[in-house]
Amino acid sequence: MDSSSVPSSIVSSSIKALNAGISSHNPFIDASTVREPDVWMNRSADSPHLNVAARSHLHTAYGRICRGDAVAAVTLLGQTGTGKTHELNSFRQHVHTAATPGLFVYLNVQQFSEGQAVRQQFLRAIGDSLVRRTPSGLLQWQQLAIALANHGLSGIDNSRKQFAPRSVLELLSRNSLEQNQAWIDRIAEAFFRVRPDIDDPDMVRAIFWTLCPHQLPYARKWLSGLTIPTWKRHELGLPQARTHNLESYAWQTTLNLLVIAEQYAPVTIAVDCFEHPEIPVPAVQKER
Image (cartoon, rainbow, N blue to C red; front, side, top):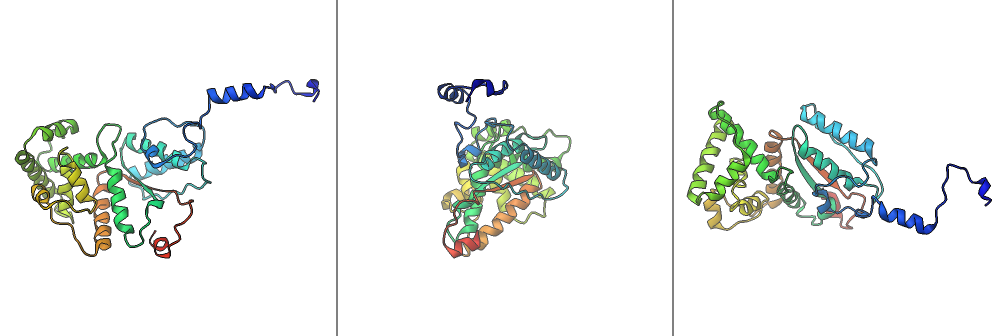
């Protein structure tokens, strides 16, 4: 091509120069495919100008939920690699840092591979999400526990200051088992005094135990519908998990948990990876 025919606004570059430019600034170098762990990383979007309309729609929907307007359902459509999971990471950070911070649950639909245990897997996936940390350093379980504890405290004496999360965690990490049991008993009693309508008081008690670092692994396991040793259940004052009708038990536990949680923080459930090939098992497809 005659150089005189090339528009003056176009600058020609050699392949070497183009490769150098891409190497120096490639917004997709770290995230050709975003995996589940990436959803929980606190980092800025690689290319924030992409998917702006979708991001704005998600933020608007979350704002409506925070105002108590309605439950919002939003569907992000796009081919594999167009940034849907990447956008969930951005939205998760928004949920955690908004004026009204919420709880974020991430579900990868491809994990639900057992046709006879989908509801159990669903409950465990919620538990796995709530053990993730917020920007404040608290686990989401602990964020919920503090909200419940402060509600109970306000029912006893409105003039008392609210619990400072860090102070509570430090206190319970220093206390003996007996002291922690007494603290949990007092705050649970205070909470049930203002919320006698709670359908699952054992669940609330287990949520309070997530504030104790030494008991957190057992409390979160029990909350996920899994079995913990008898001696540990006695320490925490929790009943034995049901060993029959596990799917029904898991679903009722999930509903009870979500009913409690959404009264104290907006709950976002993100279901991802629908575009991947289905597992060719009819029972699994039906349950999913």
